Image 1 (cartoon, rainbow, N blue to C red):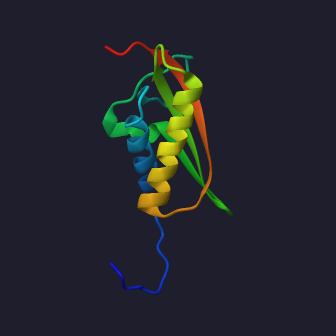
Image 2 (image 1 turned 120 degrees about the horizontal axis):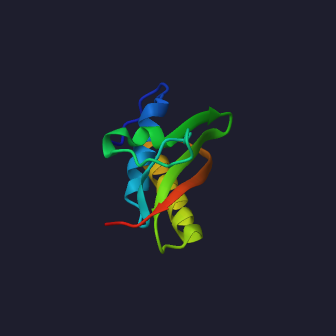
Length: 115
């Protein structure tokens, strides 16, 4: 598309959460997403249909801020997986949704052996 259309485009935070969640699950070392608040201290992996619940997107003046709540695979380097996760989610949001990124925080809620 080479034509420019005047106006503004607003993308819902739920759409951005879906994009971020899908990008996160494609990252090596991520076993799954989990709910942001573990009531009893146990991180439960959510099914793929509810990956949005493991992502919190908030709008700020300088862009969108994303909090990712993930469970990673046992034996992987947490720092490396987190950096790759940030890069992949940043790429997905800036490339597909064209939104400015204010920041991405990764919260590792647990470690699990992949079967």
